Image (cartoon, rainbow, N blue to C red; front, side):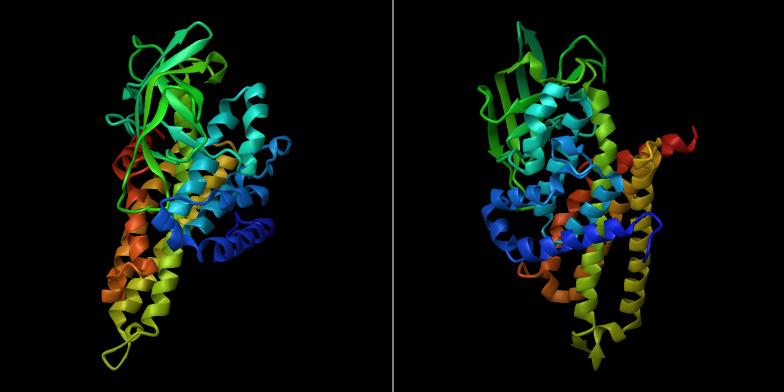
Length: 383
């Protein structure tokens, strides 16, 4: 379905991404699932094609597009059937590196951003802790100023790109006396910094080719110049980027829905049963038609939120709607699509089984559905 938000330029961009996924990802994804990571050469190739700097200035190797481009990008990556690949890329492009673009000074941008857009440095965002996820204000990792350095101590959990990432944007409490969201700062921490290590790789239900880790900071000393933005203002930086993160997770969900319906329509129109094909059964036809309508509605909701963000409008309510609706919808779609595949959909050799496992996190990560609905509810009575 056409959209008033999507230009011819973006459609050409969509076609380029789809070709890349078909040629460079889908033939190799099963191997990456077994090894538990996406090879660096693939990420380097994506950087070389300009995929890693869509919204960043050209002087840092970016392309200078807006949030609608990232929505299309995430949607197409979501179609690849390997959620771990999509997560690896989107954490780098839209969850980690935007912290540098949003708050970095010129020296920090010059030092890191060109290598980020080329895919030479892969980034991660380290906010979540064992006792603090969506509740960012309760994080406990500490950073204490000591001369011309900060010393960081604490543990981060569920960090995507945590095992093989190169550059980490770490949230830590710099003012222990401040209440709640006050007193949190962001730091740039490079891989190999003494006192910073991977505690353990984490085994997950899905996203197998995405490396996820527990990170440990033990007297990790980083230069004061690695403070990202203002001291004690890191909470607001995290909140600001949540909008971008949730839009791309919505786009990823829509792409996965789209691909799942495509695979299922192919299956039910060829699988013979009860004297015909499965698509002859009214209950299957109508359920797939209903899901297709919901997915199209979700797509337009994602595009609208992306357009609002690109216009610089306050869109927390709309973005929270995107995250809540799309995260739940993709689980509904994959449940029914797996059901219509029957026993074949339960086999690990099928894409639909992998996708069913992979999408479960999309109602949890980046802001659980319940948290998003509270954000919407608060704005229903104030707007």
